[in-house]
Length: 465
Ligand code: 5AD
Ligand code: SF4
Image (cartoon, rainbow, N blue to C red; front, side, top):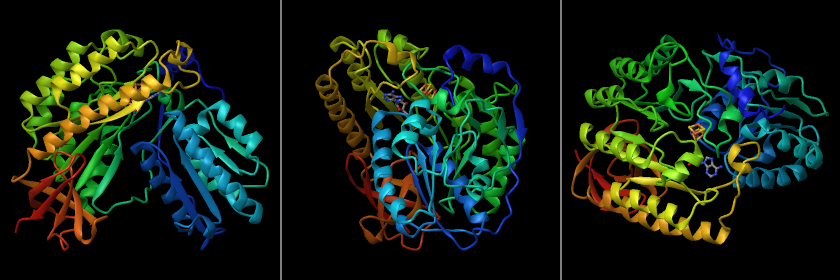
């Protein structure tokens, strides 16, 4: 339950990792009962929820989207920034009332927040009615934990990861797009980031198991897979192979669209660029977090690259992968960030014209090295920097969208859009959201769409027959 310190976490890298399959749990005690899941955070959590759903459906339970109908409530939480915490504690306030009136309901709190010692302490004090707290290394045990649940809180959280789970039964959200986990954890230890502590050291799945999962998905008719890891370009280094080799093998399976997230600029190899440009079914889209444009701040962040190295990599990708879209993550207001440092970030963004960016105000995370640095940029300045950055980013993303007006682009149609039942939504190969008219019967297909209008965050288009 303790947050491992940096040295201990690094020491763990020398320990042997076991690769195990997860056997489905067979038990009909809860058959016919309802469950409700709420997911916070990144794609990794969304995919973990697909595992949780798989476990509960396998017990014969049914999913509901109304909390008040549920016998089992699961919160799959995120710890990346303070506001993710606040949302979960806000929701727990609501559950508290519900549980008072329905004491037999089983409330489970899992995910990254459950890995934090301070959260577990707070939960024990303020929300003692919670039945189960389960960490990121214990998801596969959730079924048994629920079957054993009692009125006292069962906390199943460790900081030791030990295993890589290979065969997992997922109940996926989509019939067309699938997440495929290729690795767990992160060893980069960027100084602001809690992920290496909540998710543990980098552990890769075996290539043969990933390839057979992708083959199965192709046979089931999936059109797109996204290979998932906190830092996919470190894939396989612990097992003696590399990400570019995996990517090529996945491309050869012949699934129509392949994506991957997230890439660290530090060990993004030329071989990866070669493979991406060689296979038309690897999508020309890369999410490449910059975090800061200032060398001084990048160093304080422990990012292992300079502004110049980032710019060179960006240009090399753009030169070798035709029409490649690149998005990024940027943090403003890191400890000791001066106006001059921030201007370096603006300069890089102005020079590179990102297709889009997720921008964040720095949020100190307990136990990380940055949380011990002087958080000396005032909230007012942080907010003002965020606004200036967003104006620039949004204008660029609108411009990159406008460049598509009048062009015909391939779109994988997913479902009805929020614009009404006649307008469908989907994504281009470069990961731009399009609202498409005339594509009602095209769900699950890649169709040609003529782009008619561009906004900052989406495009409008018409299907071309
Ligand atoms: N404060 C603000 N943003 C953060 N991120 C990670 N940790 C923090 C933090 N402590 C951002 C980074 C990362 C993205 C997933 O979240 O930009 O790439
Ligand atoms: Fe966190 Fe990403 Fe850095 Fe890993 S590479 S520590 S997940 S920001």
